[in-house]
Each structure stands twice: as C-alpha cells, then as structure tokens.
Image (cartoon, rainbow, N blue to C red; front, side):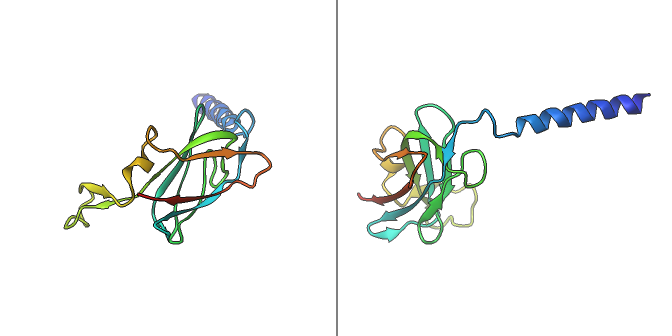
Length: 139
C-alpha cells in the first residue's frame, strides 16, 4: 500500500513539473544575434546582457569572432520584446594570477559598458526583426 501511494505522489509531482515546463504563460521572445568589437577588433569571451525594464534579462557569451546569440528561457531563444539596456563585460585575471580561480580581475574594455547605470547601449527587440546588433565599443 505504501509503495502505490509513493508512486501516485511521484506521478503527481512529475505531472506538475511537466506543466511548469510548458512555454505558455512566458513572454514572447525573438531571436537576437550580434557582434561586439572594441577598437575595431572582435571581443572574444565577453558577457553580453540585454536587460528589459521589467522581466527576465537575456544573456550570452561572445565567441572568438565577437559574435553572440542571446538566451532568456531556453538556449538561443533570444530576448523578450521591447526596449533593453545592454551591458557588456570582459575581465581577465590580473597579471601573475592567471591560474588562480579566486584572482582579482581587471576589465579589458571600458567598465562603463558593464554597468547598468552607466551603459548607454540600448536595443529594441521586435517580433518581426531582424534583431541583429553591432556594438563597437570605444574609450
């Protein structure tokens, strides 16, 4: 008897978990891709975030070519529709501490781009797109 009660509870829990995974009820997203450059060169291994006034931010890392594709809810699903503030960060360990995972880090691009309050980068995501952005960072 205990075993069948446990199975019923497990089945109920799995059913509820499956409901929570459905796409219904989530805000609409659109595919977003882009390129980050600094002084005309691609910025590899940077962290790009699109932050809406309300709702879940989208983020991605840049590849060796400086390109990115955003994720919000599912891998590469893009960003929620509307206006976003964009932040971009790229840090590296300070000299001599490259192998220390707890090392202090320094920014290799201007720090203003990594600050939600200081970044002046904006992007508007639309359902029809194309939502392709190039951010050419300067000092």
